Image (tube, rainbow, N blue to C red):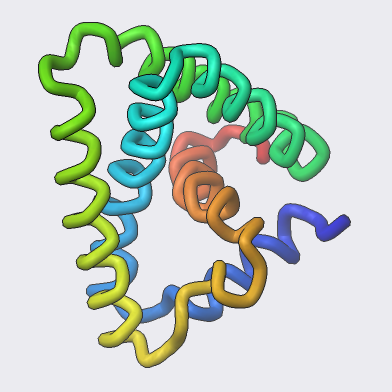
Length: 140
């Protein structure tokens, strides 16, 4: 399995353009939210199972970042029941966020990383969280 540094460096290769990075700062969390929201609408347990799958990837890569993703995701899952029209909100945000993501990669001139390996769909959120941890002086 790749190390955290290997995952983040490889992901970062196609995320150097400032506009693309800005788009990712907004759209990656939105897409992450939408995936869990859509799974929650399908069945709340589906979202919790997806969290377990994500953690199975995150924990070996970085325990501190896995804890951060756990806290973020659990907080999000606890809020989902209070969002009106969750299905339509999640679908609309998901579509718009992906349009922006692909636009960002067009500007970047490089394909999204997940075209190479689907695991990069899980790397995007920890790529951002890693920046936050570094800014706060937390270990990754």
